Length: 440
Image 1 (cartoon, helix red, strand yellow):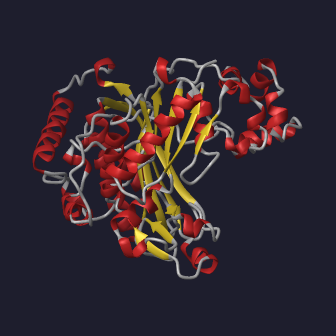
Image 2 (tube, rainbow, N blue to C red):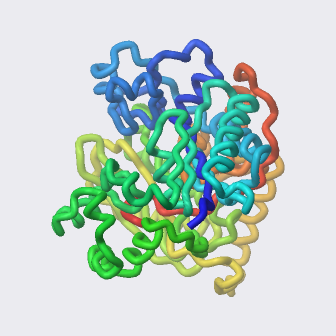
Image 3 (spheres, rainbow, N blue to C red):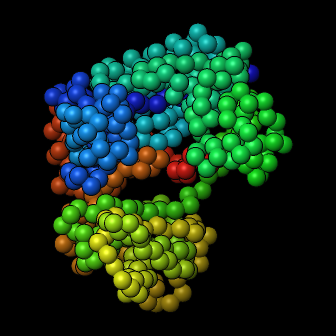
């Protein structure tokens, strides 16, 4: 099987972007946090911090003990999105991008003249140089080259930071044997336990399994797809459909009250509703949840009927909130719109009140698109406009062209960052992906 895919994975992306734009952070351990609070955790860490054991998810207090001298910086998600699009431009200057997988991952299809290890390696090195020259010296990437996207992603993780690994057909499967089972996309903690219950704990044992055994372990056709990916079969991309639109937010200390949690949830719901409409969907279900400071949580949901307007979604949320019962100190809030249906396939609103609500939401979207997000907003969320700013889900990168994604007050922060240059226009709409590693 020839080499078909070149996979680019940016290393410690958020932390590296901060080091690129803030020279005083270079060479120092850096932890990127959602807010300056001891109760939060690192959402990214530099390699200097990782050397001391600080990883994504490490609590701020623990990180201080593990890595004295670590510098905590509040995430600047707008900056990261603009750097992401600069990286896309750098990669495209070498070869076309086939698929954007996340904020820090993308893949390219190798042409018929670049499918040898030598030629593909030259392309990979050229991409590294383009990123360094066009984006910055402190933004490094690892490149994986293999017969398919699955193995190319695995290869990109084998040498970090700044590595380049080729998994050619003669290398397989022996070159995979030193890896852990959890190094493979699709094998998270739950699947690892399932493999271990069958006595499979090494990659060499994994590679000895056939399709029937893998289908039995996975409980379906995913096992067959995993087997074909593992042996290097280059399957066409499966069509995808967005399953959910949602937002979550860790509350700052001043908003850790029932009223604060409610206000931020209203803010998140308005953001999610506008985003859902921009993507062209209606919602069939609304879930809301609150995680409490000292453990425990509240959760409720409502079944909907192809709802697309913000007012109807707020009515459902207010009904849930009124029935919440006893309430402790909230720490994190979130909501999810699911059972999505494309607007073209949804039942059109029949009654005048429904039509009026949809028209009002559409008009608000148009005004906010022209004059900036929240130029027009629901009155009850007015005092929470500064809460829950734009955050990046790694698999869903906001568009540069859509101003409703951004808080206008934050623009000057990234525009005046050192060495900033105007990024190319966004041309890629990253596909929705399941965040769980237990799904292939």
